[in-house]
Image 1 (cartoon, rainbow, N blue to C red):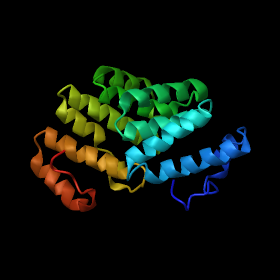
Image 2 (image 1 turned 30 degrees about the horizontal axis):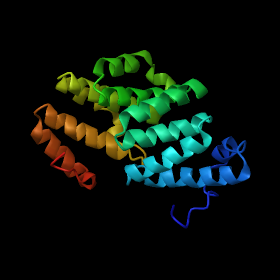
Image 3 (image 1 turned 60 degrees about the vertical axis):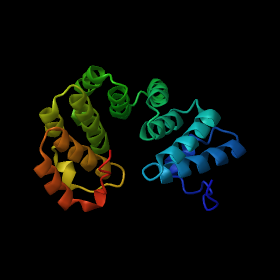
Image 4 (image 1 turned 90 degrees about the horizontal axis):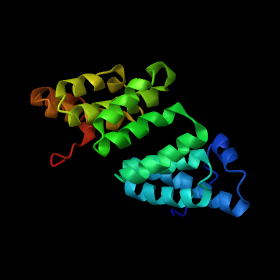
Length: 204
């Protein structure tokens, strides 16, 4: 746990959700939540460990199970992520969890299940972040089924030109990789010149 994290950094609405815990446990969960968010995009395995801790300490809270599930998803622990996200969905009923569940299914080789989820949720009911996450899930599923052109088309959206610290890099990276899988190396290289900060791992 980084020494500079106190738990006071949490948004008020999130702090309120963990207010039902004992004071000492609430403080610990708060610190782990802050650490999880700090490392989610830069060190997902570390974020995942913080997610395991909050799930152990406050697993009855839907928000906690959601963040633990997303952290597990980012770190590549797909079965565990799916378990946590389904639990969060049962607790909260939030439609915003469906894109992450679809990503888990796609990553576990259940491409048609992922597409079924994507097709069952109206984009208009999702937040912008939710729409992006669902597109990433559907594109991954299309690629798994050998539908490479469809995978590219799924990710071709106005959000590619927008910048958001939560999803922009993953959306652009997914689009770049989809272009490569579709045999469009020239388009992929051109796209990379627009966003050189992607720092694509060519061995991936």
